[in-house]
Image (cartoon, rainbow, N blue to C red; front, side):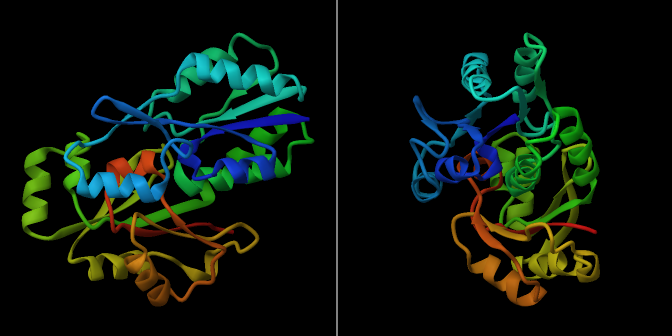
Length: 271
């Protein structure tokens, strides 16, 4: 059997992880000098309250080698092989640390998922469903699935991308002044990619809904609608798209740090 390890950017809670029989390593969010383990010391409610009402802008930290090593050793007590599935290497250095730990073992493998949030959750669910297979077969299944998974999201603000250094502060300030709402995706390389700029969140939501070809959705895989902090825009997207779905998910703190509140999007797999 293969043990599956992922991180909290997957939007898998600790209780869900226990039910699935997978390990979720918490990433770290830092407000000032105070550190919080994502999904353990801080939940979405408290995080978004701090983000929008507090004076300190949060930062995130990678997984530590000690954290990864501890998870691997615990997994090896119950499994023949271990597959580590962290956040995309294009978004965090955590993958390189996972790979470094994996190289110390013959039966531990680090897989670059090239995704995060519920995209990663979908990948973890697929791996868990096939855990009785050898790890190299699971990796082939994941390689086939990843190009089919799509994410489109409308952000309500450029402020947090600017604060986090993802775009220039000048661009963020100008975008906010003009009420520009970016529409983003996560491309096949696992990078955040801007696909459209819309004036107003309503047009942003319409743009997201228009990007989904309903006939191509694979309903044998989960369909997720996603949001940050408040689900009002997400509910508008659900109504506009008319797509049946499995879960409406509030995006975890470690990802919310970079996109801010009031975002809305969809994640699904194509046939």
